[in-house]
Amino acid sequence: MSAAGGHPEPVTVRGASRAEVARRVGSLAQVARVEQLVESDGPARGARRLRLVTGGGLELDVLPDRALDLGRLTVHGVPLAWVAPGGFTAPGLYRPDDFGTSFGGGLLVTCGLDHVGSPVVDGGRRFPQHGRLTAVPASVERAAVVGDELVVEGVVRQATLHEEHLVLRRRIRAGLGSTSVTVEDTVTNEGWRPEPHLLLYHANLGWPLVSEAAEVDVSSSRVEPDGPDAVGDDWRRVTAPEAGYRQRVHRHDLAPGTGRATVTNPELGLRLTVTFPTATLPVLYQWKMFAPGQNVLGLEPANAPAIQGRATAREAGTLPVLAPGESVSYGLRFDVDRLPGPPATPHPAGGRSSIVPPHHA
Image 1 (spheres, rainbow, N blue to C red):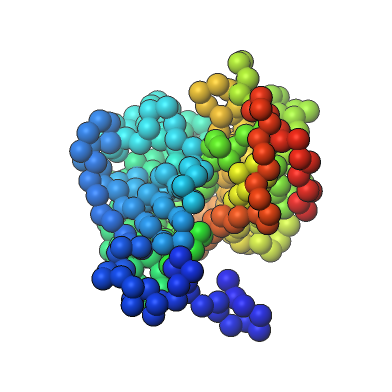
Image 2 (cartoon, rainbow, N blue to C red):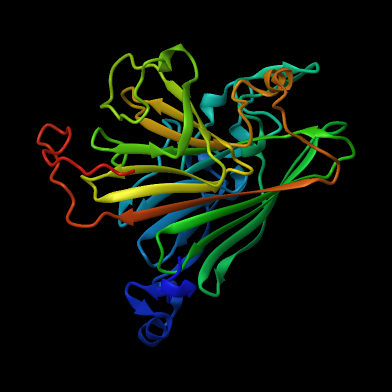
């Protein structure tokens, strides 16, 4: 962010300048750091985990053995990312024929790099649900405080003998003292033939951010239900968990420029915003699953309207293809902001506040 006149805002950690922080602590790690951990128990045993602490209230897990995807996120002590019933598992437990057993949720699951959507058979080869990138461990090249940022960089190589050779280079940045995180990706076809390339960023948000007090907004130019269960559904509305609820998906086509999706919860006094360039991510799929024990809202920017998979996209003429040596870059930014004024008082029954929240355009 920049101050008036385009000059960068000074970096502060808990209200203090970098110089003042240095005067008051023996080590910056007292207030901000990147921790490198290894899980020791349960289904995640042996998996690496990086923990980013910005010193501004944001704490985020990065999962190197899950393609440098993003796990749990808390801001000012409030958990914002949804976690699946099975939790986060080591990639050795990944089952391509049973996506749900190893889908851990978290702030970001990267789907692709050559297929998204339900499992398909294309050209005699079976492609698992949402591709297999998220089960590929990354080679971590840097995980440290660099200047005024926490930085994680790595490479994820999705390669198969006689088939695709697609490489994801990822950089994750979080400013010292901030409640924001940026993901910068470049995908390159390092093979010797043209390759289909589909990518979907599966951002998963949960309670207490996702409650019936929440408001959802997307910078859509057009919204269409994807499937019969979404027909007639108000995509903006978050409902309480309901027995028998069937998941609903809406497709948002986005105008050229910067795509934006927000979840605002006046009761928490927090707003989470996802922004991304629509030049490379022109579509956003919205996943609503408000069944008991689930209660998840997915915001999913994608590089093509191809949620039915690569075969259907090819037939529709919407399947992106990378030539040998060709690269494409993507970016996502997550910002969490406090709303002005005190949080609304929750309704005693756990429903909406009696305070009517303002409309957010």
